[in-house]
Image (cartoon, rainbow, N blue to C red):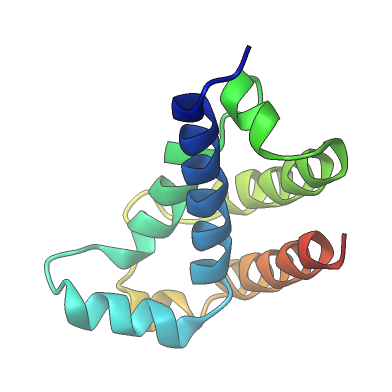
Length: 120
């Protein structure tokens, strides 16, 4: 049985995943984030934010997304993982990072992922 607390938690998981994707889609939002939180390492936060909430085997995660959405998110996660392995351990600041091929590919994958989810 699912109670309101579970439903609210699942809604937060969904919101956080979609926010993480949305942040990946916009260098302007990333720059704004850096301006609003100057001590943040936005380049690293992009990866950490995803890792904090993408737990595809977790029951609440499973209940937060339908099967098609979970597959779309898994595809993005695979792309992110492959490209993360190609980035340096210490990422450049966000102004430099958005100029890299890895960022551009992840940005494109995030945009495609959000569009697919929105079209369902």
